[in-house]
Length: 329
Image (cartoon, rainbow, N blue to C red; front, side, top):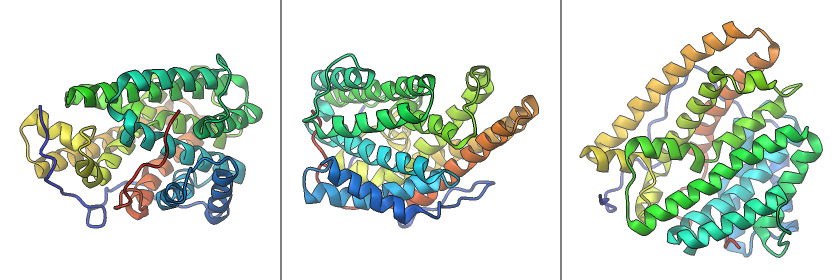
């Protein structure tokens, strides 16, 4: 399958927004957290040049954290903002750098980063991304029980493995099938680690029998799909310019013989169906458990879904910034 990479639609500035039956709000301390995140990036020397730092600023990482976690403590919001900064650096290095179509190099780097995060290998403190990732890991470890850190790490591991899958596709010039893409997009988007962070907003972590219940797993899966699909919608122009095929609109077009406009409309229909499914599921979850933690969790999922769009519409991450944020390794 091939992609018509010259056709560009759905620019972020002109795109229609998605409708949600719940409101978005922004954390009032966003400006304080943004300043601290930029200081953190400079202190750990995560951005290798002024251009990289400019792209971090344009990504509005603190605003993303503030829109998706509006009820967080300042400490948790800072953690989410700093994690988002290093994740964007990592994401751009994997997607846009020399690694993007080199599966062997990606596999080697995955082994390095995962070994460092899980403590299997000695950390390379000379690697800026290692410094950032380990700082995030240590702050989670110091603030929550170890079982929470282990769950967060296991979900973050899937992100690395999804990057390898994408690199193989790029090397083979392959557009994945729709069902395969939807499944793998849940991991490449790194949304599950953010869903774990929702528990940092609660008075106590959810017990295992609740966290692993199929209904709660479905809540996280639907949240993941909504965030990733809207991300694909708003980032389409940027990805078409770079020849990136890992976008649901491109996948729908190439697998279904659709135009880009038809594929974008199909994504919107799929999205709206997912939102309706989520609303029905929430009622079942609330009927199954009456604890305040569940209600808090669902309120936080609502805020994450609605807030992500508000960030996407305002951020400059998908503007004509060009270049690579960071080199991994």
